[in-house]
Image 1 (cartoon, helix red, strand yellow):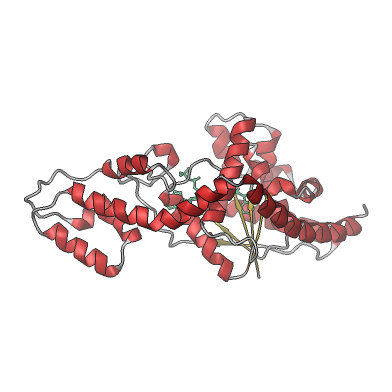
Image 2 (image 1 turned 180 degrees about the vertical axis):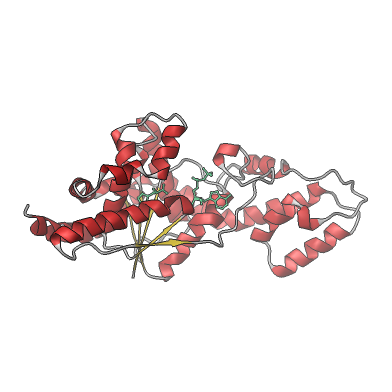
Length: 319
Ligand code: ADP
Ligand code: TRP
């Protein structure tokens, strides 16, 4: 079973990204044949600065490798290193009705927000269909906002197969309903755009500042505290064992400690949890030649599958 995952390269990542997406993706390497790529072409729809794009792609690659993406076990590459996807994108464009694209929620949402519409943004779902269909993907794990794109991929594949025969594999979206939303420092969903994140690879000082800024009620040291409604406790749940949580509950119930103490316990656990990843990440950041080698290896593996598929497709359509 082939699982395919595409990730937009977006600068810094926070612990919400990690628990909501990255960790699961890394674990899915045990569930099947994982194909995962950094969606560099898709990023062009929003990033139009050379340095920022290069930096974001490099950092996304390094982050995924540091967090457990195994380039031997899985196929991990940068989308724009395998250009066959653009050929398929054009071919599929001829099986994509205008109406289908006009109905895309993400396009409608973006233009409604005032983002200038261009052809890249409009045809984004066709490129996504090419990503999925080029690699004969069976399962595409996505967030709720991307389900429609996978459905559009199925429509496009059906319309192609109706003309040329059973050539494209029908993919299925896998939506994880149980993804718990990681709360931010203010208790709302942690998100870059809300400025309430705890960064995964921030400086020690920066992360401490973020943890210390978690919003709590104003109970005094000598009062018992309610862990069930506490943002600090909710974040501790991500990092602590059952036993550690029991002990923490005890500390909440016993007067004498303040939220500052609980925050320091949380900070310690966060640092402990990400320490091994940080080491690997720092190493990779300082060895870009090694990162390039890993990516060349991944692109080669992906290209092998892509070019074989394109041969079949070209033959079928008369090119
Ligand atoms: P942000 O909201 O910070 O812009 P993105 O939209 O780039 O994050 O999300 C990237 C991935 O991380 C998505 O798969 C998303 O579901 C996941 N994610 C982001 N924030 C959270 C959160 N607070 N809790 C759980 N998952 C999250
Ligand atoms: N559009 C996806 C997102 O924003 C990224 C993506 C591009 C993707 N191509 C894909 C996801 C193919 C899954 C399959 O998250």
